[in-house]
Image 1 (cartoon, rainbow, N blue to C red):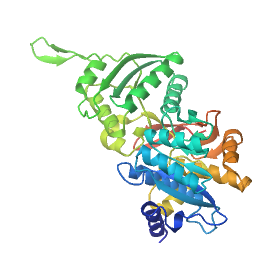
Image 2: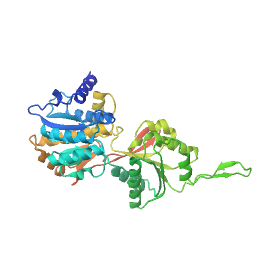
Image 3: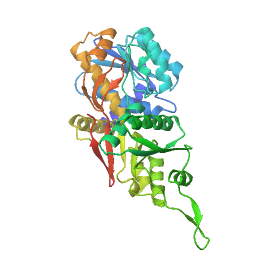
Image 4: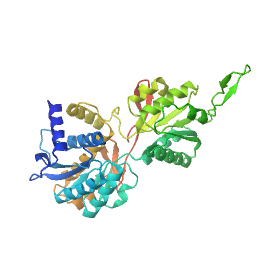
Length: 388
């Protein structure tokens, strides 16, 4: 019954954002939410909203001190800008979202103009530099690259790397950041190779990466030379499907005993489906892990599953912990103004026990927190380094 009620409530918030659930009620502190709740990115927006609603206590027995005012950005920057102004006019003390980079940039400019604290979930680097009312709680490419390179060099004691990456913004950015971080730490990138994002056959790339040539044997028949593995680790900043395919195709070319490194896109059951036993020992990063034994994480996963019927991911976790941060401010100062909330986030939130790490905001408004380092063992994920 609880799951049915949660689904009905979520539907009301998405379909009727100005319904009774989105009306300002006396005694409640209005908190605005801007997410893509229709269109191409609907699933991402709904996931984040579910975490926010759970944290706000919408499903609890106790009365919640906040009123959630939901605006659907539809993934459109112009609509997001209008949504910020609408929430400002309706008295929102703070705004959570948006999620997408281009949408968040537009929303951030408007929020700074009207001086409403806005905490975006966008991963775009530097978005919080739009002004002192703009904050960012997300896992950025630089935080992933720094954590993974640091663990590989300092803990795994690796020095020589290769990078095989997709020709996408995600792949190009992470490949560049990882290479710079490795070099900063005293390591080196031996080879770096790019592939088309839709690729499924990586034979050409693998041959180039491992200097595999075709030659003729003593009977004149063609054969491949053994792979030249002159580096210790291969970084693949892509998603689980292609990472798994690459791992299995490496085995076909007899590439063995190579440390595979990846990003949060690997944190999916699809890694095992496509990579099978060939992803054994792979190490990757993520900002959230349901596998954690941390009591805060375990309680969140249990409560979330009870209400929604599935285990949460990083979007749900970021929505939840960001709402919890605002609630902690309002608990200390129920009459907090927008400026008070802005100052509190900047100067008084220090090592807040979030699901994605102990959170503080630096002077630019960017969340500073830990990163999980995960390892594939059999058909399960083991945590090598917890969020803290």
